[in-house]
Length: 138
Image (cartoon, rainbow, N blue to C red; front, side, top):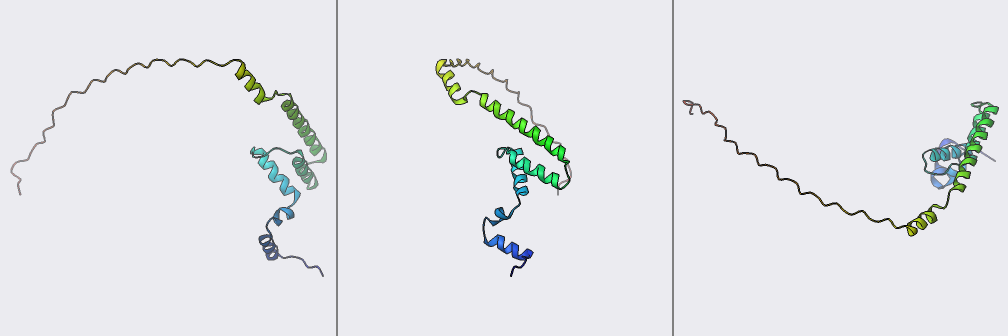
């Protein structure tokens, strides 16, 4: 006999079995988290996450189907362009080290520091005299 789980039972199950929350979480929630992390540059962007979110938005009527297709086409083109740029770059580690070995840069000579001029000392001021009141001694 199958019974439905209530809110308290699900909370207890989630607390008692670590890691089950990630298994039970929807793919849309995972995609949303991954896209947010990619936007914050904490992880790499994945086209599959964007595709999941576009499909969800289309199912819910948040995006028209043709708009979702155009968005995915634009994303795939931009992602491919990025991959092509990365592939076209020379290997940065090897190129920099080869240049460094070929031409060592001479260190600039330090300039002699000029001695600061001594500041003139201020002339001492006479102390101010405070008037004393007479006749009021108690």
